[in-house]
Length: 155
Image 1 (cartoon, rainbow, N blue to C red):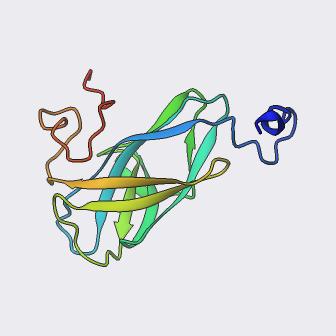
Image 2 (image 1 turned 180 degrees about the horizontal axis):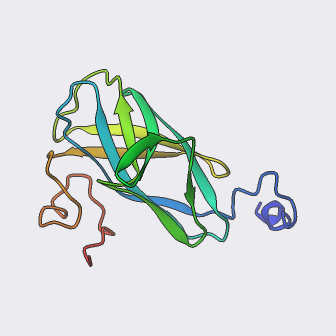
């Protein structure tokens, strides 16, 4: 069954096996607005090829990808995920923006999003809604309902 995948050398059309993506530290701070919220997560690429986050979809509302440069936020069409590297969407930096929310998310709820990439298959992520002041790596980082044992607390 895997013999076909091993013969893809030199064929870039469906070469989605080169990027090896995983998602961690996903969360949404409880929004103060009824219609807008931010979302944060880290996409790690253990593969040998770069990929790009190109869009995000959710039943909760419209989701756009934003970058922050010199304190200014702007919507972008994609963000790169380097080979053997990661893309960190975090407070004060690049992030997801939920707009036109169908209902205001409350702490303890979960928003489901689907991440779309230039080359890799889509990935569905459950994003728990945290307190408005939650920051990963703080004392309450390990007390998540949907947390993963791989959360890093070395920072």
